[in-house]
Image (tube, rainbow, N blue to C red):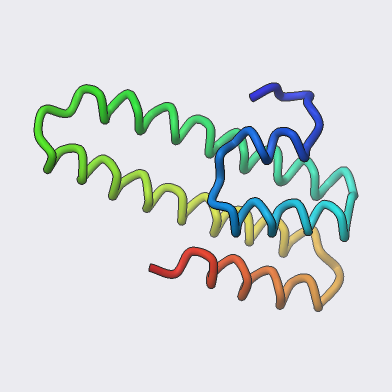
Length: 112
C-alpha cells in the first residue's frame, strides 16, 4: 500500500470486508477532512501490517489447528483495529450524529 496514494484507492487495495470498505468510503465522501483521512490511513497501515503478519505465521504453521489459531488472532486484531478507529474518529468528530452512527455501524459490521 502506497502511503501517499489516493485514499479511495488505498481503501480498495486493502482488501477489506466489503461492508467496512463501503463505510470508510462513505465516511470520506461525507467528511473529506484531512484529519479523517489521516485516521483512516493509520487504520489501513495497521491492517496491512496485521495481514502481512498473518500470512507469515500462517505459512509457518504446521497443523490446521495452528492455522485456525492464527486466523482467530488475526480476527481479534482486526476487531481491535476497528475499535481504535472508532475511538480515533470519535475524538475527531464534533458532530454528535457521526459519533453515534459510526459506533453502531462499525460494531454491527464486525459482529460475529
